[in-house]
Every structure is written in structure tokens, then in C-alpha cells.
Length: 493
Image (cartoon, rainbow, N blue to C red; front, side):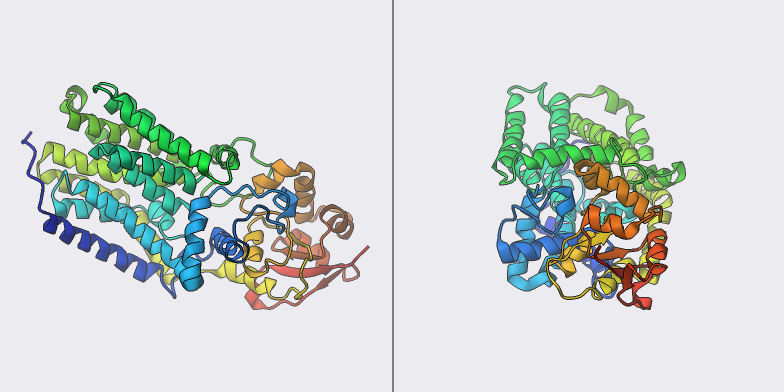
């Protein structure tokens, strides 16, 4: 093993940063900006845009009267305060176009922090290669850098947290933990990082409790000063249960990121992770040496291993597993300091992950985007301009489109079917029966249980019932732009 190299000059590191920025700019130009708009089918995009609009009009939201069946009309448990404060600020500056611009800005910032961290331990060209090529090779991860969701801000604070640990910056450690807690509900992620850092890096050191205290202090401060405390903690626990599959609603249709993957899909999504972990673990010096650089490498190894295993349960964990993997590759290459290791690691990456990434890019480039969102938005435009009416939504994600396009209306739920199941399990079961066309008197149940004036539905069972009962349901127009979605007016009892 060679002695540590001299740090590259600032100008060389800045040149590498410029190249990394150019790579990410090219990616977003090709697959995010119009007309591609990857992620435009994501209902969460419209939820966050809708919340941003409401904040611009009313300030801090304490209630969300639109989503009355899950209890948010009385109490809105905001779980992404800092992210929505950022989108609100962007909206005030340049409208919703400026809000959407946050996606490439935050995604590029994540990559640049990874590059800057690696540029101090390996050659700038290697840092640029690892920080851009590895994320681009993971379709599940790069997709999550292309959608308007608060995890973008959380990932940025996560990589800043890793930078603070590796560079021994306690003040940055506190800021990163506080920022994460203010931005996102998954406060247990920085807790995991701090626990691993303490046992694998700080505990053997003199006064190793100090960085732990800085990190925990920042995390607690971020949780407590959040204007939605303690709802942010409660929602974090609820979302952890959703990700782990506990207390799942019966026969619920979740988004693809919650659905379990097959063995082949998991290998395609995470195959390189296991390959790299096996390569690192096979090195004798990795198991024996205990200096400071070895402690950093073991921390990144343990963090990548744990987050990869969590990704087998919920693909969302790749949001943190892949940045950890990027740093692990760089720290491993600089530790052995042999040029051929770069090719030995990047080659299998391109083979294992490159195929799925190529399929992802081909699909995004050739297939039309935003079809499902277009169906819902077109159907919503057929609703009469009467504020305060209640819309029964067959699909849980329809509420996000309504919040964006018609915030003057009320509807059933938002974001996840678990919320309705926990708030009103009787209504959830009635909804399931209605959606599959199993209700003997759908008009009566829609009126009595949900107080619905209209129905926005993509379920063929209920749609067939309503179409065959013109005495109780009146279709409000249908054309090809609505696809399988139908809109009906419900006759009063």
C-alpha cells in the first residue's frame, strides 16, 4: 500500500466539479426537461405542487380541508416542512417552473457533494467518474433524483452528514442532522449513521463522544423546532411501518416503490452492491488494520451493507445506499492505490447495472410520459366549477391531482391508502367493495358513507355499475384524453 498522496490543487478539483456538473446537466436536459419530463406520472409531484400553491395563498398549513376522510381537515400532520418551505420560496421567486427547477439543482448538488468528498482521497478524474457514473448506472436511484419529492433534500443532507463524519466537521454534522430532520420524516436514517459512526469510528478515539453529541444534538433540535412537532415523529414511525409492510391495508394497491421485487429484479437493481461488498470484505488488510483510514472504510462498508439489505425490503432505501456505495468505491480504490482497481470495479458495474440502466433510458426516451396523470387531469377538467363539493376517488393517488387542479373540492384521501385504513377502516372497506363493483346500492353508499357529489374513478367494476344506472349516475363527458378514468355526478337521495 502506498503512502497517502498529496491533495490535488483547488483548481484541479474545481475542474473535476465542472465536468461532473456538465454530466448531470446533460442528464437532466435529456430526460427531465420538456418534452420528456420523467416522473410526470408521479402523483406526489402534483401533491407537492398543490401544497406549494396553498402555502403561497395561506401561509403555514395547519389543516387540509380537502382530505377530510383521513382527518386532515381537522389537523394536517405535515412531515416535510423544510422541503415545502423551499418550494414555497421558489414559487414566490418564479412560480411553479421555479419549483420544478429544484429537481435538477438538488440532484446536481448531491452529486457534487459526493465528488467533493472523494476528491480529497482519490484522483479528481476518479472522483468525477465514481460520483457520476455510479448513480447513472442505477435506474432506481437516478429516477429518484428526477422526481419532485422531499427525499431530494434529505439525500443532500445525508451526503453532507457523511462528508462531516469523514472530514471531522462537527458543526457540519449538527447542521446536516438538523436539516435532515426538518426536511423529511425518516429521522431514523441519521440515527443509523450516527450509531455506526460511533461504534466503528469514534468510540476508540479520545473524546469520541463529542461528534456523537453534536450529531444527536442537531437531530433533536431539528425534530423539536419543527413547527409540526410531534407530528413529524409520528408520521416518521407510520412511514417506517409502510416501508416495512406492517399493518398493511387489505388488498391495497401501493405504488411500485412499495411493491416487493422478485429475485431477478433485486439482483438487477443491486447486484453490483453485493459484488463490491464481497470484494472489499475479501481483502485481508480490511479485516486487520485499524488506523483512521481503515475506520472510514469500515464505516462506509457497514453503512452500504445495512442500507443495501434494507433496499431488499423497500427500494426506497437505495436513496441512501447508492451514495454510500459511491463513497465506498472511492475510499477502497484510494486505499489500495492501484490504477487497475478502477477498471476492475467499474467493469462489473457496467455489466451488472448497465443493462437495467440502458432499458430505463430507452423506455424514458421512447415511451410517452405523463399518460396516467393526463387521464386524471383531463377527467378533473370535466367537473363543474362548483367549490366545496365532495369527490369520491376510487384511487388513492387521484387526490393529489385534485389538490393540484381543483383545491376548491374535497375528496377521500392522499398519498397512501394506509392513511384511510388507519383513520377510518370502515370507510376503507366500503371503498374496496365499491371499487370492485360489489355494492348492491352504490349510489346510497357513496352518498351516506362518503357524502360524495361526484365520482372520479378508474376502477372498471364501479364504472360499469354507474354506466348501467343512469337514474342514479350521470356521466359528465368522456373522450380519449381520459383513458380509463370516468367522471360521474351522483344523484341525491
